[in-house]
Length: 275
Length: 104
Image (cartoon, rainbow over all chains, first blue to last red):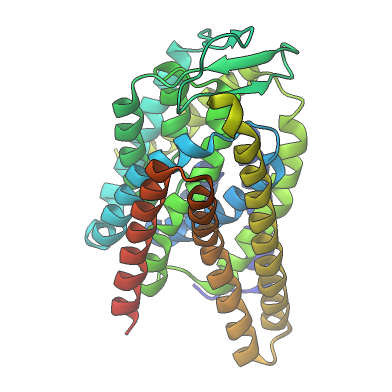
């Protein structure tokens, strides 16, 4: 398609909305941007996914720069899981050119539906241990929780599960243009003992490296239109500022519920398109 | 042991924050300038150069974050995490090499 100033403006506005919601949920925002650019706007799936993945890098850097210094980002756990997520990103980045758009769209519907179910079944779970007396171990941590007002300590459990889901998230990220946080955050929260806010902050940092593990390949493949990518990135940067401001005032349960509703909507849109 | 190294991890977190915010601002300025020139319709060569430079700075920022982490873990003598960081850097090197081979 010919890129006109009005198309640039629309892409920038959709980037702003996606960035705001993404920062609010600890995701890259791609889960909103990909369906918008692809299903609504008519870009082919690989182009939409590649542009979205570029914005994931921007969201990751911007959101993490904002959260840095609050002890919410678990740097050691993040780096360890990046070994798996980057491997997934490289693998999918190399193979995605061989997959058809319809296959990718079906996959997108399935992934979104699975995650929505996962979130809804675990809405009431909390694994935050208030008191700060437990030994967090080499990968755990402690932070000041604004919601309860106390110091919270946590241990990381089931590390192989966290590594496995990170590898899967890396593949999903590169193939579908999303951050991969929508897979990692629920699993880290539900099974690995990592509190919601720490999972979200650590995932936000990780998705930048995960995306960079495949974006250069997609850039070389010609899937990234520079003016549209620039418009989307600038929109996302403005939007994620808003989301960050909002996020500091939102409650964890409300965040989970909102996350699940959004995923169900995205999944329905894609199931209707491909069935 | 955990109590001892959390201040240095906190310092690393703040330092990485600076790396990320610098990278984001630099790429946003390049992308905004490139997009502005591109919309203006003249100087298309310069516009394309600025847009591509902005995208490259954006992609380089998380890689730089991993490199800075590597340096900090060496200073902290946390060899396990030095090794982990090296593996991540090797993976990103594979990506960049594949991208360069497809472009060339």
